[in-house]
Each structure stands twice: as C-alpha cells, then as structure tokens.
Image (cartoon, rainbow over all chains, first blue to last red; front, side, top):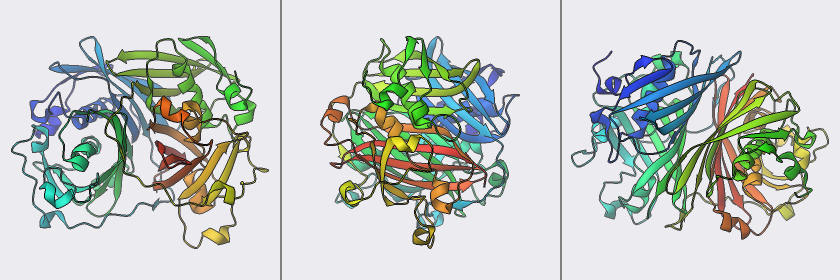
Length: 269
Length: 269
C-alpha cells in the first residue's frame, strides 16, 4: 500500500463479502468523515472484489446518517453479471445501523464513436492561481490543494455577493500530489463546498443525502493523464423546501471530461 | 383507480413487501417496457407502502436487463427512518432474475430559503407548436403529446445536422392530459429520445443503465400547477467507450423547476 493518507483512508480488511474500513482522522469533516472519501472506500470494496469485471461506469451513494463509530462494515453484493456489465448493491453499517447504501455499475468499456458535448471551461492555469488557505477548516480540505478561478466560498464577500451565484470553478489536486485513479476521482467528485455556502456565504447545517457519479474514462485513459489536477465546474439547480441539488463536471488538465456528477443535499436555512 | 392508461400501467397487487405489476402493452418500447413507466411503478410501490413518510426527494433506478416476462415482482425495503427523511432499497425480479435495483429517499419537505439558479428556457408555447407524429414509433411515445422547440430526432436531418447537437427542448404532456403527480413526473423524466439519436440521427442500439431523479417540489406545490405540460431541456455530456450520459430539467408551464434528472446509457455505434 502507498503511504499516501488517501490510500490509508480507503484501505480495507476482512473478507470480500464483509469489509472493514477504519475511519481516517485525516479526512474528517465537521460531523463524521468527508463523504467523498467514504464513497471512494465503497468503490474500493468493489474494485478489489475477486468477482469484479471491468471498470466503474456509474455509482450512486446514499448517506443515511452520521458515521459515529471508528469503523464501518461494507457488504458488497454482486446481483447480476451481463455480457458487458455488472450490477452491485452495497449496504454499509456502523455496528447494527445502516449508514450507507450504494448501487454501482461496472462495465467493459469498448471503443466506440466518441464525442464530448460539454465544453472545457475557460480558466487560468493552476500555476497562475493561489492555493486556498485551509487553516480554519476541518481536516479533509487540508488533504487537497484547491485553487479557485471562481466561487471560493471563503473569499471576501464584497468581491462576489454583488451578483450571488452558486457556481464554482476550481482546480483541485491531492496534497501531496497523487496520480489520478477511479478512487481519487470518486473522492474529488465530492470535493466541493456546499453550494449554499457559495451562494449565500452562510455556513449553515448542510448534509449530502445522495451522490451520483458517471465515469467517462476507461482504465487505460487514466494512465495517459498529464497531471494530478482536475478542473471542477459545479453549480446548483434549485434550493427549495430544505433540499438543493448540484451538477458538476471534472476535467483533466488536457481537457478530457473525466466525470459528471450530481448530488442532493439537505439544508437548514 | 383512474382509467387513464398510465394509472393502469403503474398499478400494483400483492403485499407491501412483495408487489406485482403487470406490464402494460400501451407503454412498450422496442425491447420491453418504457423505462420511465417502470421507474414510476417502482415509485408507486413506495408511495403506496403503509410505512412511507413524506414525499420523494431522490430516486436512482438501475436497469439490469430486459423485462421479458408479463409481470415483475417489486420488493421494497425500508432501511432507515430519520427525523426528517427515509431511505428505501428496492429489488425487482422477473421470475428469479433481478432486473432492477433502486434507491429512494423520501423526506418531509419543510419551508426554507428558496432560490432557483437554473433559468427557465426561452421557448415558444406548446399552443404554437405541432405535435410530433408517432405513427411509426413504438407504443410508449403514442401515450405522450410531444412538441419540439429544438432537437426532434425525427425531423428532417437537413434542418439540423449542419451543427450537430445533442440538445432537445420539448413540451410534453400525457395523452390524454393527466394532472401532474410524482409518478407522472418520474415517467416524464425518461420521456426523451436517446441523445445519440438526436446528435447523429442514427437509430442504433441504446439502453439506459441508470436513471437518477431529484424532485424539487413538495406535494402541495404539485396541486398549484397550471397545466399537465412540462418543458423538458436535455443534453448529453460525453459519448465515450460505449456509454453516454445526459442531464435534464423539467419545468412547469409557469416556470417552476420540478425535477432535475440524469442518466447513463449503453450504446453500440
């Protein structure tokens, strides 16, 4: 195992049918662990399962309640294998309480006609931008180098509240840098601050209840990526009746669409 | 029960723990039933469950394989009830084969600060547009009145292939008209043609493997809607290695964002 804190955080013991993960203090959030690393840990439980075929196509993780124990037990179940894909259901427990559910699809990605309809956002390069200070933040953002083109929720409000927007455009890389793989892309798909913080500059109770990630690269393509940086573009759809959604994309530094992702979060405001 | 074909199509018998749905011939697609009505049937199994609390917040449905039998058996399992929301897992079978899995969140939607960041698309009204002819299409599109502002996959290619795009903007209503509810919004969230058909004007093998829907209205708000029409805006992200995604929004005629939805589909092309 690599000695990167991320690899330690997603590491597993136990049997393929019942995996144990010890919660890493390095990736804690305000209450419980950062959901992105939790999702990556679930993906890791399937990627290292002896029956897995292919690479991840999609995953949905639902967050049922806070993880208050020092470890979680992950139970992956392979429910169907087709000619070109596989379907998994995961149930995850703190002691006897179910805390996470997940559906995943793995597939053999074969070559096909290719087209990217979304457009790589115009952005200054990460070399031209400053890293966001993380001094007063929980542990998890300290494991990332985040450089904002737009929508830093901790920037001076005067700069940005004239026209409130939920949009962020940010470069993000693991700190220290780590080669991108499916597990880190999963965590990076949740490595944004809540859109409510960005739009309103209000740090209020928010919790993701469901996260969906679609993977747009096959394993071989990950090998070709030029750097550990992703350019993340994310914005909310609607805040209403105590839930809001967001839609995001993660791009490689050479302009490939790696992931599209969506989530719904609960809020009190 | 209403005598609308949609209500017949999503109707259920059996016990709350094991519901049977008879596949409606009216909503068949090329192979098996239209996935939107299947998703609505699953939602109906939870909405009519005696233990349900609140209204739907999010649902993900994974399509594991074709439904080749005359009926399906739906097994909803309530896995956690919190103070303000509920988590469900559903497994669905054709005889002994699992054909669908689903995760749903239901919540008590309480009033909160509200803001819609997405913008209601500019579009001619449905009265000014012609209904899409459905003569040569499978049964399911015949149950909808679809009127395209943009991105009709069956329009003359010359009009639209000069600048290929996967974007559609369409008005859709049940035929005959039916008051919008959570079940019909679920089906309407899949009532678009595959983005590959729109972009390439090629009718090739395509199948949705996963569909996610976020609901942005509470039950009371549905009562206020002015008409059975929704304005659907949808476009692909990336077509690559035999899978593509799309992102969509459904708006009411009076400009409310009702639903945001995403899916990933398999294709051969």
